[in-house]
Length: 294
Ligand SMILES: Nc1ncnc2c1ncn2[C@@H]1O[C@H](COP(=O)(O)OP(=O)(O)OP(=O)(O)O)[C@@H](O)[C@H]1O
Ligand SMILES: [Mg+2]
Image 1: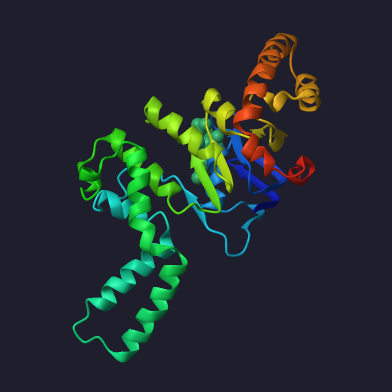
Image 2: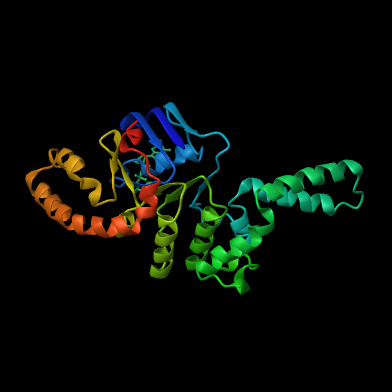
């Protein structure tokens, strides 16, 4: 679980958010929305420890693992496709590398043997023996054939790099998955595959996207970054206007937008019925919405 406590952030006298208190719980996919520059990526950066809020704390429950979609498409250029995906699980990759280094030693000592046994135990606990086949399966699902898995990332076209980086983020089913604009650069088949993958995902997902259809398909909660606040709403992008939230939202809107929102709300009830079917698994694991309102 992710917890945000009294978080405030200001850049150059511009307040992004003030005293934000939120909880992100397993079984939910949170769509983070807001205008360009509202502070969505900055918020995600706190979790990745890229930056820290000026005030307050963001914490991950003990022993939980977070994984995020890397934004730098060149960062793994000197790595093979397979190793890039495996590095999505930092500790697993460290253990694999340490083991390989130990077994390669010409003067393998008794002490090395003890260390290797410890590493083997940890490796088995992480289901390390299936790591490469799991990674290969993810890649193949994203249409990256086996013939490419040992190629260097530098040799891949941009359209394939984004898929490998996506596979890296998903690899090993992290407790918390952070995806900032995951559909950028993906072809429709890959987007559709990702939608299905997320709909079945039992852990916590935070996804920043401007793609309304994608948000409607995968999200169970919306997280709106705006006007110095971050607010949570139950439902996907359209059904974020369920009756209670809808009234709250519409009360703040000028007349014309209210009319549009009203139409989109009508449409969204059709979407919601369809969504209830496709998201039933995820909704099953959802806890009472009050728990999410911090
Ligand atoms: N290190 C920084 N120093 C100063 N200002 C910053 C810094 N990082 C971000 N900002 C500013 O904070 C604001 C929020 O940026 P952020 O990238 O989080 O927005 P965003 O909601 O992700 O936007 P987009 O939808 O365009 O990706 C922007 O005005 C940005 O210029
Ligand atoms: Mg951003």
